[in-house]
Length: 197
Image 1: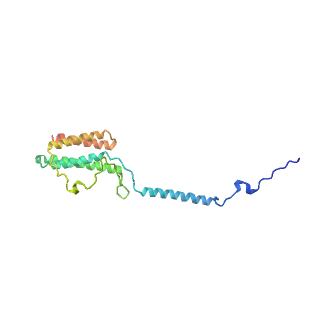
Image 2 (image 1 turned 120 degrees about the vertical axis):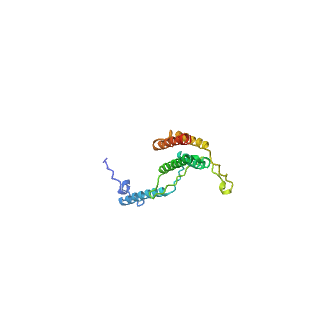
Image 3 (image 1 turned 45 degrees about the vertical axis):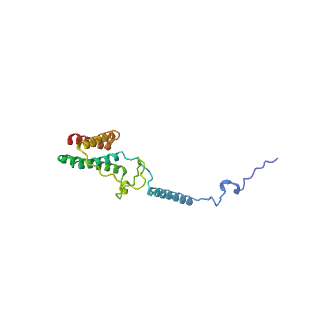
């Protein structure tokens, strides 16, 4: 019995030679798709970068110290009415505490950053208390009347509290922030102990 060799299958049956026009991609088409995809990725990234930042940050721990420094400065200025003989010392305290508040604000602004055009980004922070609903007390006319000027003893206690608070936070910070808070703490100690002593 003669041995027959099987003939090779017709070319149309070879799977690697089939060309379906729906899936045929030449080199030019592949490059077009890759280029379009790359441009799309960059456009999507640019659009996402231009959108609003929805991140809510924790409050900066320096913020309460800025508020306290401004309150101390206002109290020192108001205390002049009750102790005019200490005008010079109280003016120095008000000036220094205002400088402390400005330095703390500058440090918080540095952390947030500045855009190239000089504007600052929106930096939403979480509030620690419940938001007040309805009109504010000032708008409704039921605002608390201003408090009387503090005595020198009250101001001394306020500065002592500020000194301790700044020292406590300085222990938890590092670098410039720790040094800034330690300096503020030392200044408050001098103000309470020497200028008002």
